[in-house]
Image (cartoon, rainbow, N blue to C red; front, side, top):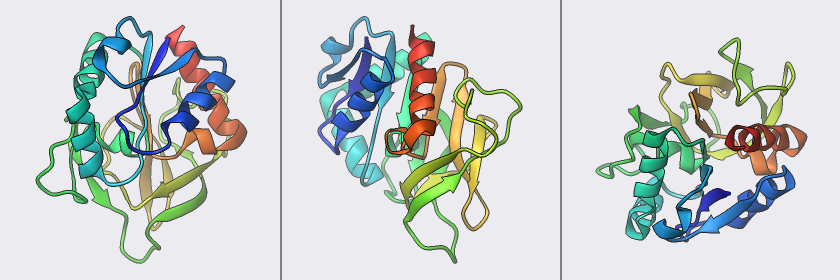
Length: 200
């Protein structure tokens, strides 16, 4: 069972349905007890960093996320769900993120339209990645965001939007994407199938 953390913000059902279509047994989970025994955990997110962090903490699902990551359970963060894995965000000064990655989420570069709301091509930055397995040489995916994490050693793909923008990170079984796999057609479906396989 893959637990999709439902902390009351955004259309989380779309991520759940896309995972089911990819062959996963995905269940929306709104309280920590319901996540017990999950073989994978997904943290989706849309909207403002601060509001999402506040909602996540109010449900206690922040501990589910942190405990799963600490235990090495396959984990996938999506969009703001990826950003919440970082220490902080310029979008919401004074709000702490989960701090799994020691970096800050920053505003997209000056000179580009914000948000980036379009299809863009992934540029792999590692020769091998379980997250990106089977996506082909120039996979196109769908983005909707005005902020993105500062780069760290865990980056496996970027996109070009006024310069390189972090698009995906991978640290062992911990994966996260700034793009929306559930809105990215066959490429996104492959990412979710890769995650489902990692959870099996």
